[in-house]
Amino acid sequence: MGSAWRTYPLDGRNGSTGFGRCHRLVGRPRGSHCGGGRGRYGEQVSLAPGSVAPDFELPAAGAGRPTLGLGDLVAGMPAVLAFFKTSCPVCRLSFPVWAELRRRYRPAVAAAAVSQDSLGKARRWLDGLGYDGVVLDDSAGYGVSGAFGVRTVPTLVLVGTDRQVVDTLEGWDRTQANAWDLALAERTGIPSTGPLSDPADGLPESRPG
Image (tube, rainbow, N blue to C red):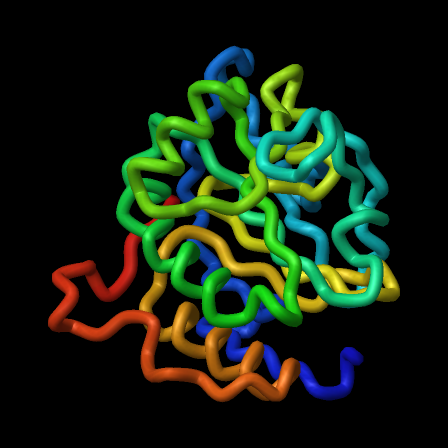
């Protein structure tokens, strides 16, 4: 599966956008980072492509069952995990785009929005932005966000059926969003219907999380 995927790095670091500013998570001590491991100088480190994604089981809405795990999501198809917080302005501007990405490839790619707020709050927020897919509740300590090394929201993580991280995308970047669309089209064989975002939609070219 992984051989069909291409990353499109903007700064040469693991195919990510490289935005370093952190949307600090509510409830974290001052000076703490948003999520999992730390790099050599204390900065947050997202899971690199090729890393084994950590297993999890979280409360779920829209899944037809009370909880959902990584194994359920990647059973037979890759999965996109979209980490977010409802108070994050970059999440608000980008999630309609991620909703469209989900609609284009949902026959062949699973998707779950991983919320750092309660399910009820997250579901209402997502419904208002046109995202009607599965939402998972990571609000109890952000354990899954931490395990995935999420340092800013929004962060998207593509996980293959072998449970390996294929690519990550942080913050909002039009070039990266359109590259993900083309790469998913190539990976799934589902033709892209055009750019996910262009200047006419009024979104900024890029915005850190």
